[in-house]
Amino acid sequence: MKEGVFELKKGFLAVSLSLFLAIALIVFPFSGTNVDAKGVSGSITINKETYKYIEESFGKNRGITFNPGQHTYKITPNPHDNPKYNKKQEQFYEEIAKGVKTLVEKSGWKDTLSNITALGETYTLAPR
Image 1 (tube, rainbow, N blue to C red):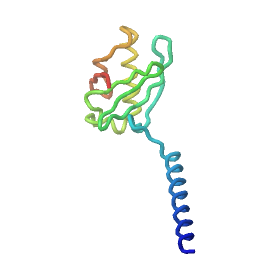
Image 2: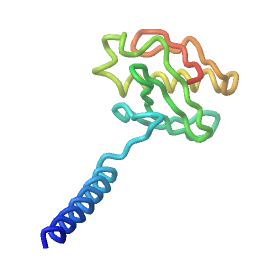
Image 3: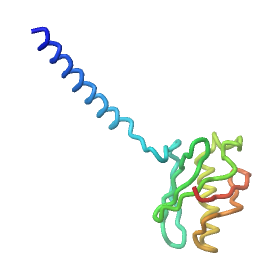
Image 4: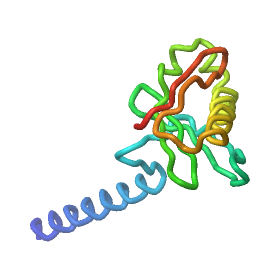
């Protein structure tokens, strides 16, 4: 009888743990490659095509992705070095997107986009 009760408790524990993990994955989804930072996003029209851009997090640094096309760039220098960045992230990414628009409309999508100004600093967008 004790063995039966033990097996029942063990089975209940296994089912409970599985259910807990399943709920946790639904509530707290994650990706092993990129973790969204604060999720700043927006859209911009470049060469008559609307692109959605979104902030990317690469460890301590930041980047930006434009879709369609999956154009993903790392931003250097690190935006966190700009004291205005933390309080004006939406403005930062909007200014980066406008800088990208200017360069892409002039020369097309390049691997590296240089001399983009945001929040008074100059940035380079390079391949991730």
